[in-house]
Length: 397
Picture (cartoon, helix red, strand yellow):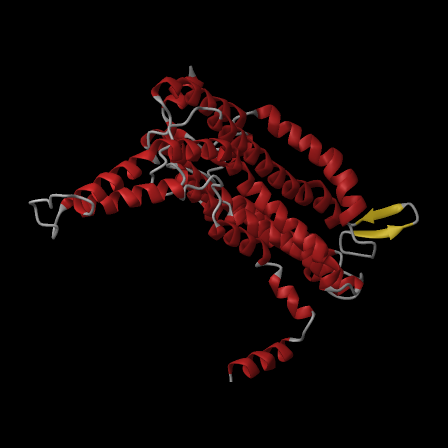
């Protein structure tokens, strides 16, 4: 009954408003029914991550100084993770909710869903809401984070092999500091959980679009958006820009720690940078390709349906005004025939230029730029800022 109620009103569609963590935020008065109180929520999460680490490292003399190779406040990767990535992952919820929520209702308002397919559309909505509210899914994420994220990924590929504020290398592995226990038990798992939770939400979003793409949509080849009416999907791109910045910040912190602590160069990570940019484009724009088959079919059908119409009109116009034995009695100046011919040409142009890839160049640039923005400052490691300034002045002056 609850699922059907949700499905009956597409205005309630959201891949964000649900799940145990959302309910926890509400009970803690850090979120309202529509994800209000974003600032309080972000500050609370950052405080739970950063403040205990600062206190514990200060107590052991690991916040600053030379007691270890990497003190807490000099750990670029950890600071980027706690002060940039986590706030962005938490703050993106409100943006994604506000941007994606109208899309479900737009499918109906634009007449894209035929009346006979309305139950199928509502079933897709209800299924998405059930997955979003799943308690088992978030429990599985927690198990995965502690079982794989910490034990394998972080220890094998992310943890530095020098004495840091969180761990000191020993013959038997690593010895954690007091702050290290909090870092391993709470900070790292929370970051990984938030990231994994977003991937799960993106899976729900992609699955919803896949189910909608299986409906025989009422696409109009003459629609001015040149996507048969699916131009509404363009609004979803901006929703994911914050998540793209979060990924870029995560990679930027990881690369920066290797540059400043291990003497690596930015160009050593060019393939990593390219890979994460491609991953972001596939992650956020790839789901739109599910509609390509229907768009291509609508384009071909539109060509067959509308192609003969302008040809017929042009032929009759030619016979009336050009190749005629008896000139028309009405004046050609101001004749509606000319305007109609132009309108017919515009309509056919829309059909002829209909796209079957619902991805714009602007969307690609927006997401790629958002991903690369946090990485761009690392270019200064290749050239001192003074040299950059001289180069700019030389170009401009």
